[in-house]
Image (cartoon, rainbow, N blue to C red; front, side):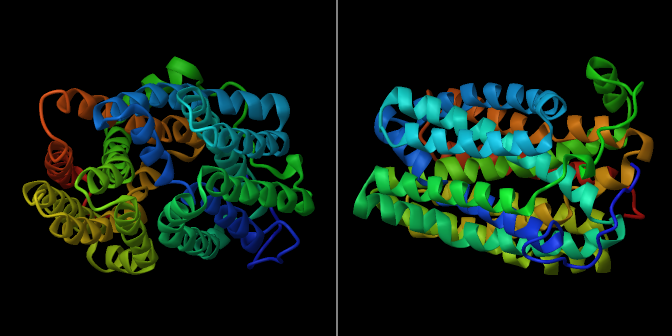
Length: 396
């Protein structure tokens, strides 16, 4: 990809650059973290059982996958800045629907938030690549991840606390207020569509041709599977841990506290990056998959004791932080420069598939077994992904 940026360093708060993009990412994290635990708990309240919540998330996963494929078309038609504004507006509309606490509002609101998130994520990536030199990404990305980790450490618990104390309207209004603040700040930055990274020259593979090219490359297939594995675990964590804690009699705030404690482990990502450089990506990813999977299986085995489950899942989240810190590197090292735009688009679908497939599988399992089966199956699956890490080239 041709670099067109002349920006360097951290930039200024009021101008496009590393600092301002990190602030945008932090605001985006506040939007979603503040109700991340509230949404599945409200779905449980409306639907009545974890099985139906699973099927709802699976159905919305199909919508999320379709939306992820639609956003690049919107970027070309509306331009990145307008698409980003649309994402903020859809997010506000989504939380407004969720505040109605009805089945229709729950479904439409989750759809709006999901599509809005995609409309925010992709344009911000394009602006980042367009404004910041590639050599400066090693400074800008850690700053972005750090500002994003702080909201996720506090938001899941704070959102449920506000929900319990002041009700749905206030809890979802907080999320909407962060979305409005994000739109105001993005407008102040006066982002230039011409500076956004191009999606690639004419004549590159698109659609099914790009998919066939992706599947034909073993290292890209492996990178996608590893990324899917870690994201599937986070899907399980965010949806089923609050439901488990609530149905186990510990209350909504207990589940929110576990989520906040687990996501707080993201502050360790810089240390995980050092471990990867010191001992190799292959070894660290393999151990992290094993640790996360083993602890999650243990949580299922100890499901009669909610405190023991929490003590297993929080350190499992620390291992998952290592997967987040290093998990994209196999793809970044494997993708060919001239294929980055289309291959990156296909690679990014791991998130949507991870939001679709695990809830569908868990919904079927919950028709036959109790909720702890989710922890056992999720953990065993991660142990299977640990075996795949032996195919990562040793030089990584």
